[in-house]
Amino acid sequence: MNTDGLFGDRNFTSFCVSATMDPGVMPRVMEVFAKESLIPTRWNSFIKDNNIMIDIQMAGLLPARAEYFARVIRKIPMVENVLSSTKASPPDRHGILSTNQ
Image (cartoon, rainbow, N blue to C red):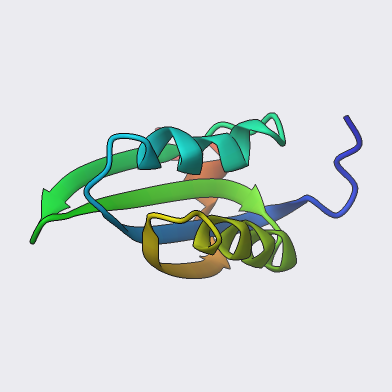
């Protein structure tokens, strides 16, 4: 798989997805990443006010790629809202070990 332009060394992206209560929404959202052979760093879902809330975190996405994923998720019929945020991740998220003994 060609990953040129897909990953940024120090980027960390969060997606907050709000969708109508439908059991098919979670696999459809996961499929967006699976089609690119990606696995979210973290996935949390819960019910709030008759909606499914999905919080997804991905390490290493470039901002442009993160926005692409947000646009694709927004096109899923049951999805009502998608918020995304990309920031530089702290060094400990990249396996850099502390030199402190």
